Length: 364
View 1: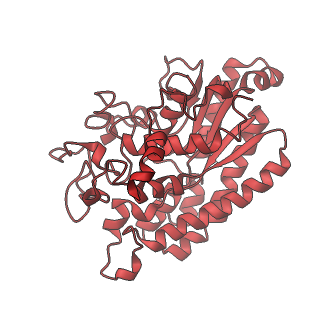
View 2: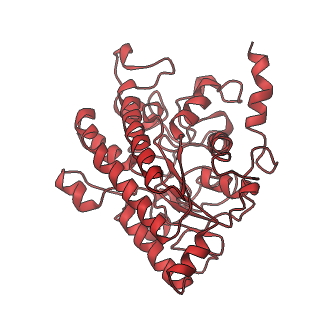
C-alpha cells in the first residue's frame, strides 16, 4: 500500500525549479511578507546582532552562512519566490538591498498584538519590540519612497503577492510559557485574529489584490512544547505524540481566522484572499514522514540542540557554544526545537503552492 503513495509524494516534493504546481503562471512581480521567525529573512539580526540566529549553524545547509533565517536554509517564503520565478525577498532593514521585487517586513519574535496590549495582560515580548503594527508602518514608509500617489501605488502593487503572516503564534507562545493556561490564551484569540484582519484591510487599502493569510502550525508537535509541557499522562498525546491541548488551541485560532477571512472576502470581492493551511501542511509531513525520507525515531527531536527526550533545552539552545548539530538535517522535521528544517519548509511550501495556485487563477 505504501508504495502506491510514493509517486504522489515524489510529485509533491519534486524540486521547485520544475514547473509542477508552480506560480510562474500567476505572473507575480513582487512578494511582500509580514510575520515572525517563520518568515524573517534578516530583520531581527539587524535589530539585534547578538541573537543566536545571526551566526552558524543557522543557514549552514543552503547559504553556508547565517542570513537571519531561523532554519538551516530556506524558508517557505523563499520557495514561493523561487516558484514564482522571483529573487529571494530581502529584509526591510537591509538598507542597501534591492526591493524591486518586494520586501520582507517579518521579524523573528514578533507578535500580532502591540506590546502595550500584551503588557495589560502581563505578557512580555522578550525578543523584539516590532509587532505587526510596526511592520505595517515600515510598509507605509517603503511605499512613500516608491509611489507618487495612491493611484501609482495601486498600479505598482497590482501583481504583488502579500503574506499576512504567519503572525500571532508568539502572542500565544509568550503567554503560555509565562504561565497562562490554554483557556486563558483562548480568550486572546478573537483580538489576535481581528488584528490580523485589520492589517489585511490596511494592505488592501494600499492596493494589495492577492493575499495569503496563513494559520498556525500544529504547535503541540514542536520540541519546545513537548519539552516544556511534558507529562506522564498518555491521554495528553495524539497518535503522532503531539500534545492535544496545544494543537486544539492552534485549531481554535485557525477556525476563527477562517471565519474572519470568509467575511473579509465578501467585503472585498475584487481581492483574492486565501487561507494558508500551515497546520495541515505540517501534519501531512508527520503522517508521511517515512516516505518523505525523515527518520521516524527523530520526528520530535531537534537537529540542533541538546538535552532531554527531544534534544531541546531552553538554556542551551541552538547557536549557543558547544550545542551540537545533527549530521543530516534532512532526517529531522525540527531544526532547533522551535523552527523547522529547510526540507520540511520545502515540502510544506509545495503543498501550499499546490493549494493556492488555483485560487489565484494562475495560468488563466
